[in-house]
Length: 462
Image (cartoon, rainbow, N blue to C red):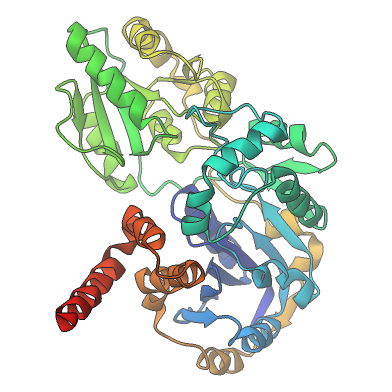
């Protein structure tokens, strides 16, 4: 079959906005007639998908080093014209060299700050945005997280300068580097002024037809929406602190969370309603049903885009958010609401919630729009060479894929356990290792097995 040159999209096995962007990009390029190969990596493992306009093949699992030669043979038969990386977390060095191995240029989209800080979100020891301090302060912070790196990331990080030098050398080889917002570009330029970085805002494919909400006058009880699966970095602690303050002070504000507080358990204050996980197809109607007056975005780190912010904007609902990152930037650029200092006290935030004039912004309907809702032509990103027509032997590709392990579920819990076992083997089965095992929730299944074996050994010893 004849198709345009294939594009290889590579990202780590993570969820959220990065994964969404990759698959929306894959579908857009496929509709333009390109062959698409997606690699979702986890250390030495990967899920491999091949997408073609008229046929889609079942995904398979690639395992290194066993499948290295087979994978390269398969990718060459797909006539790859460009490799596009979207995240490097949990990525073995082999995956980083695919562009070189295939003799094609590679491109990078930096969806967060992993390449300048392995903690990803630029969160300091005080739990808020660190402002990119000196290397000495960074190394102190990294040392305090050493246990976390050894267990969760399977790597040892001691020196932030060495870390950044490694990634700078790699990124300098990229044909182009993209970021989703100019706020991200600004922060990377502070660390690496020599890198040429292009702003390519995430196009948004909206799965539902929408109508903006009606403008409401101020009510006695203000209903403030919050959206997302919130951890500390996204403001879970802030939301809980604000809710407690509102309850104690009998203040006329109540919070409604479309999502969950990941690190907290019930009971929550009466001023906070947690609705649980949502789907984008249904959340718009939920928001309308809950009669939300405006939304609060309380992140403590400079987010790089935020699809959740767009949900509020499509409904014409004003927002109050932090003054850093793409959230603060997008709010101020488009006049969607107001911002407050990211390091504000709970008292200050509560005061802003009460006095935010959301009706003023709700009347400006013409500003509440997301214009960027489609991808450009692939050649606009990768050059005209990517448009070249090639003959793809589908039978040969299918035959190559049969050589791989078809059990796609293999890249999941059991692989996390198998990968983490390497760490235990390195440490030895010490009490220290067992203690770390208990701390990590991913160890629950493995821990039960170990406990059973220990119990049987003790029983036999008796």
